[in-house]
Amino acid sequence: MKGRTLLETVASVAIPFILAGLGGLLSEQTGVLNISLEGCIASGAFFTALLITLGVPAPLAVCGALASGALLGLLLSGIHMGLKANLFIAGMGVNILVPSLSGLISNGVLGHKGTIRITGDYNLSPFTWLMIPLTLLLTFIIHRSNFGISFRAAGVAPRFLSERGISPNRVKTSALSISSAMASLAGAFLAMRIEAYVPGMSSGRGWIALVLVWLGFRHPLGILFSAYFFSLIIIISNITLGNLPFTILKSLPYIAALTAFIIANARQHSATKY
Image (tube, rainbow, N blue to C red; front, side, top):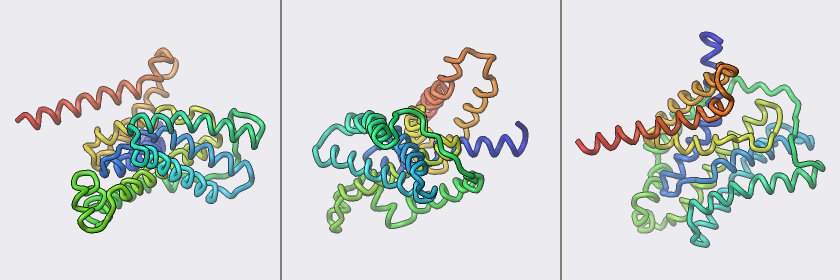
């Protein structure tokens, strides 16, 4: 794997991290960190595979995945802001709910709870480099548009919105819904890339995406470069398969995430101190 091939592979592996990370950033800007990204990725992958298996065209299946994520965001918002439940516990509840619900639906529709294989000629290469303009667009939206101002105001100055007749809770609900939909899109991409839904296939990507929000200093471009870094780590771990124990290989991305997060936090603390 050399030159352009390596770059393309890194960019492709990074797509789910970028989508989920940017989604996590959107909700974080409003003051409600989306803990349910892991479950939303799994939901997007499941519904994409299920709908394609039932004969739904791939573009519509992806739309179904987006809708599932948006609904999970609304559910999280209702539990947290409507019922006043702890955000972390509510998000964990969604993460636990999705695999169980997916198994129930799969068993009822397909007669089994396991892997759902899909076939089709999915040309995903055009999406590989679309993440860069998407990140630039999101940077503009967050920092230069009225939409972004409303999102940021909901997190740091909700009274500013209330005085202008805008409900901060409604803005936060919108952010959670969009955030969850973006994470579900990441799951849809995963399912179409490997042409299957496999229980547990999110494999901690949602949690790593949350780390990327902070490692990227809460900025879209920071998340983009951090996602490329972790994708490179994952590719290196796959290349060295057989030379290292399997348990170490599986934990390598998480070790890298923890190490990078500690270093970034230490640097930020040092900058604040001086």
